[in-house]
Image (tube, rainbow, N blue to C red; front, top):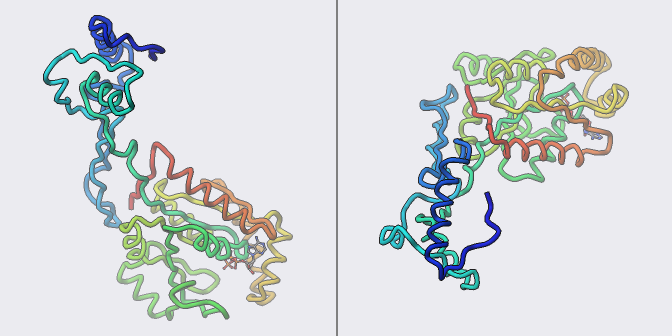
Amino acid sequence: MLFPFSPPSSSPFSAMLLQRLLGSVARRQLPSAFPLPKSVSTVISRPAGRSRLGFAPSQSFELPLMASSAPTEDARRSSFVPLPPSTADKATLYKGLEATLGSTFSSAPSFPPPNPLILVVSGPSGVGKDAVIKRLLEVREGIHFVVTATSRPQRPGEVDGKDYLFVTKEEFLSMIERDELLEHALVYGDYKGIPKQQIRDYMDKGFDVVLRVDIQGAATLRSILGNSAVFIFLVAESEETLVKRLVARKTETAEMLLVRIATAREEVRHLKEFDYVVTNAEGKLDDTVKLVESIIDAEKAKVHRRNVQI
Ligand SMILES: Nc1ncnc2c1ncn2[C@@H]1O[C@H](COP(=O)(O)OP(=O)(O)OP(=O)(O)O)[C@@H](O)[C@H]1O
């Protein structure tokens, strides 16, 4: 309820009336979700214990909805504090409002900072997963691309430790044995897997992490991460564009291209298991990345946040 006027501060009776009114409105008419003013704070906390990935639960967060509950000197001295006149200077008016309410205004953040996100980017071979992620990392800070370990040979221009962690088949198998991978799969005859430690390290530092996986990997990650991660499916505007893109890349033989195209036709059926679909249209890489950024921003503004449950 809003009061379009304030009673003249010279009238103790009016000020007292306003005080009473504020108290009774707060107690009787506001829904219980908005307790006032003694209990104007609420505590948001994550469940106790550590997740399977080992993230420490964040500390409880005192969320001030309106004001702190610490009574001011003035309020303690007297139960009745007259409001200063509306013509008073800003500082006096501010202090007067605090005194009348009987509590100081809190400078604590209105809402706790968002949790780091896990972003899973997937889509058919050649759709532009690498290109989109590479550009995203160039334009946005606070994101870490989790470098996938793979036993496939390095392509020209790829950097070990940046694009992929290139390991031998034997090295990859020992990583599986040591339980160092969040998920792994055999893709077109080569192993690919996501190292867990990298995710832990960067999320602990507050980074959002991006995982790049094929559809098979995304399905496995969905079963491991559930709704705690954000799943994005990249598509080209048409099959024709996708094939042209793959052919232009010149990294596959005709047989390999055939397998990738046939697989892409199957993969599109898994679309419904994702949270978002983003079209990476020809020549529109920057638009694609902008949309991905909007998704990240929207996810961070959610009231009901995703918490990593691994
Ligand atoms: N929006 C776009 N417009 C034009 N070309 C693009 C676009 N996005 C990506 N490409 C090009 O398409 C080719 C395939 O992209 P990229 O290698 O990133 O695909 P990918 O999904 O990572 O493939 P794979 O899963 O096989 O590794 C590359 O040559 C890339 O430069």
